[in-house]
Image 1 (cartoon, helix red, strand yellow):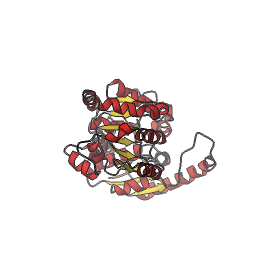
Image 2 (spheres, helix red, strand yellow; image 1 turned 180 degrees about the vertical axis):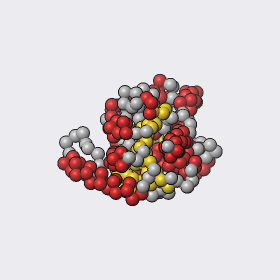
Image 3 (cartoon, helix red, strand yellow; image 1 turned 180 degrees about the horizontal axis):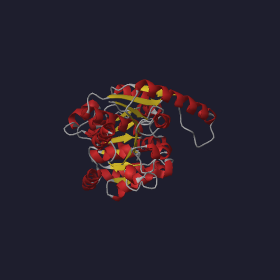
Image 4 (cartoon, one colour; image 1 turned 90 degrees about the vertical axis):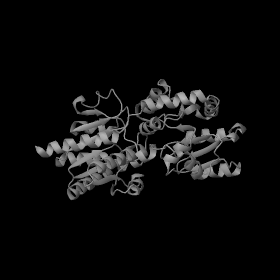
Length: 368
């Protein structure tokens, strides 16, 4: 069996793709898997680090604002379609799985032209443009939120939740290892800040404002800033002698970060939400305000209504983050209740459900 998994651009696309690949390999170890991503995007580094081969397309997204890069978009699209066709003809996959992101469109389009079975995984409550366009070509569409029938044919959709990296959500018994890994004191509360794989400027600014207050001296921080803000954050921490704050452009051992944390501050992307539900620790969500159809706010409100999170508007994060952390620190019972509410929302084994359904469907196709 040969399978291509295409897509990426952000951790929200890359990490579910890797989880699906690992589940397929667990069920059918002999399966050969090839990833196809966009050159210059994070998947070109992260996927090989997870042990899978990847090919890159010369493709980028069409920006909604005026941009010179949009002039090149038609050329990039045509070139990437040719590259995708060449990869498919050489690799000869039995199926293509699209997970969203720049590269998934050309690969799924080329697969449709060649008659290769297509499967899609949609992480969000509001589907991306590529998945909406390719839905009619897919044999199965794996979704994580209800109410998707306006975009996807009901007979093709399977509600399975979002795949999460199992090595990331398995945190039991890792607290001591985690605090040692990050050089943290055992008796002082830890706030973990994760702004997504690219970081988040508004969250970074809110953390910086919070760190200027003396009250935060009684806390320890694991601050994932994204590459673009890391040097500025590091200079700030050093100039203010904040030895209890550890700055990381990207956290490789997210399992240990989750294990160490007492409170988590995060964006509200679908995969972040899915991981946080499995982790079951109190969270402050600051949704990205420019996500398509404001889907991050929809994700966050769903969690808040279930009692699992505080939600802050992006524009008010700088003024409200510190007080929200203080409220949680002062109320251990509230923290416990939030963690329990999050765990009730977790959908386990999404990766296995997707892999099994995909393989079963391919087996049926083979039987004719």
